[in-house]
Image (cartoon, rainbow, N blue to C red; front, side, top):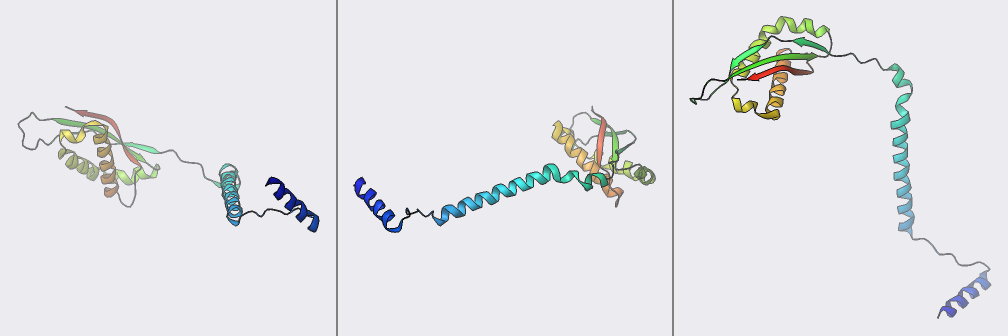
Length: 168
């Protein structure tokens, strides 16, 4: 049987003078081209990530300004007990506002009494369980940041940072 195939190939070669070529299936060719396109795109993207940002744009970029910090007065409030007969607990917080630039200090100073009122009224409604763990402190930080941004709108601060927190 193997001899028959070989003789047929030899006959076909003798008649045409050329060995018959196997044709690649169309799916295989398309898959190979698709793979080359994907690899080429990844290479192009990698080239632009590594070498693309080091041209004219890097020289034209302005230097980044360091943030400014503004100390807020210390806040001492009693926490809400929600009708329980437990002893009263207190929260003492010392906060620093992270501002995007120095000019914002002049905008915040006139509204400082409003900010202190916002802090006092919000912190007095907290329960001791609201401050449990790092998740509780993170929620407190996010809520204070949101309230400060609402009070000084349209300006915005970067963050509220804790210098000191004592729950007693």
